[in-house]
Length: 286
Length: 253
Image (cartoon, rainbow over all chains, first blue to last red):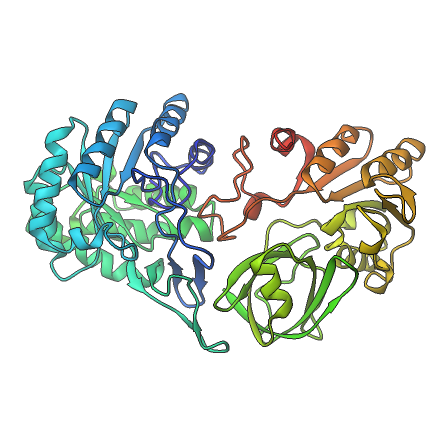
């Protein structure tokens, strides 16, 4: 799937993402009210190793959710609606609209690192994660995915999300970071702080996936963070992910999906497996 | 990546248009093509999409021609010191497979013409220009920046200079009379591009360079979606064949 935040706020984006080869589309995080987002600069590529963004959860608001779901249905593709609220009532409102529209699943953004009140404050506290996931998962029948971010207690929060009824986890979100321009002596992003994504965070994210899989065997994990080649995706699978999301990797190379799929097919066959399922979590086993 | 550049000078070219020249402090990641653009970061103020008007790789100099429409462009015109250049962005156009090119500019659509014509001259492509503006005081001598252009036809809507009328009406006259050009490139107001698309499919290639709101410039935020087409200006454009963006153009008032 694409990582949330790569397009995903207009029906036309669904077309673009489906054409790119993603097997399911993940929307931009929707909030109840439309959000303009931050003024530019909102996204920069870092020479070393990824991207830094502070888009500010720009999205057209709750009323747009059915438009995207309808488009995905017309194209015959599953769509995961990402939602972000300032409190449980907003999450439930958004989840209900997503369910009624016919979304395949709902991804709770519990980890946006650069918008106050949306995400990381909830996601960094296991008890808050438990309470929120419990309330949302009981309000809807559709599968609820908890997207968590990098923080001290992410493994514990993962467990709490699963306990509370999350069907799956997306690990991880972007990591709070910044860049300073040395000529003008100013932070580059208009919001100063943003989320780091791309190759720089892959080893961090793979560790989270590995540890959560080890702690909570049977957990359904979607790995996310710095995948730009089939080998990156393979690492996540061996760590315990059953599915992967690609964000920065797609910005850098819009052919990435086909390349990853081709590479994984050869890898699975080369190791003598009939299907990729046998390789999930293999790094944990003797 | 934001490449550092230092502003060398700003000049008013006419009552409406400005020129700014920048010295690259680091080389660009790749050589630009005509009709590509930069997002220019004015530190602490804004990041603005600007057509590349001139590029000299050997000297490490880039220039833009622009109009001041708001806070960001005003700050760009007044800014001294360092800027950040993101790009080159967009698809651009390589004119070298053609032999005679007609460039139709409306207003600030003239901005990419100098780079296009210099680039074209290196591979032997003849470039003629039609440039239309609202009033004669907005004009400046485009040959100052585009030394290799063959013919320049000015048009003013207030009839104060050159042809009396719009760029598209002058272009329509020229295109109906002459089968001279094998490619037409148009840049300017979206309504002008829409009108010129009537000439698509008349035995010559026709490209339009469109405008939209550009924020990230990297294909992530979707601000530049050319609804109802599943196209992003910053990665799929700004240069398109008419049929790729005609519904977007038709939606313009």
